[in-house]
Image 1 (cartoon, helix red, strand yellow):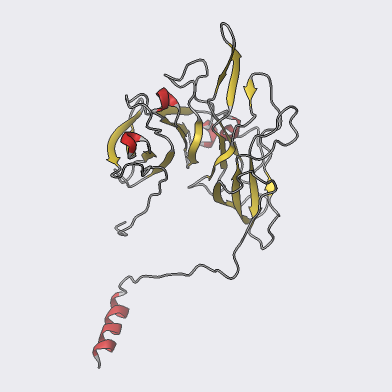
Image 2 (cartoon, one colour):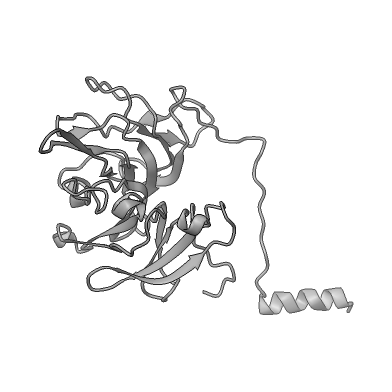
Length: 313
């Protein structure tokens, strides 16, 4: 038997893992086009599997400069679109989110759609959508005050609103507009974010004079107690103007096997950038590790992804 045949037999018997590749189909791409020029359609995207109502895969697309949907005296709010996996260019449907407003808030220019995410680890995953420039309006001692705290929305698996679902009725306005920029009165919550099995995690670059922050809202997974929530954050770590929270993710098996690690980027740290890894403590998210960037101006940490590169799981 030749050496090649011996090698083939050895691989077959011991089932040695081999690499598998794939090609991107350039001949038949799925292309979706926005409805309004200048809407920044495609600024954020997420794949979503709908299992309720009908079963289908959707592409969720943020368009943070989209025109408002018929609101009086409001020109531009941003929007999120739901697009089927089809060969049609213009079959995306707008998700109804901002349907009314009042004098105590400012939705003009809120950049809705800056963040879009589908819930992980859930058979009927919900959808998270944010606008980090949403502002609260109130009258101060001498003049009108506007606090750009940001706002996020959660909708059901079929992208509709269910008033009996505590995930959806939560306002996700965790920053106090009564504070100033030295605290979290201008936090820009929702510039980044995601939604997991029990957590909604949101970046807030404006907190503590642009130090930034990450807020994690834990919700009890017990169906009879989903009203119960606990919110934790990094708090002030005395590093101004670093934009922590510009990107954020939450994954297991990073620092510890069975515990979630919060990872966030601070791309303006020391003009190079920084990635911060934290773990949940009893009262807050505790900083566990800093990973600094190396090149000036690189914006290290502006985007993040977690992957098992050496397949040691």
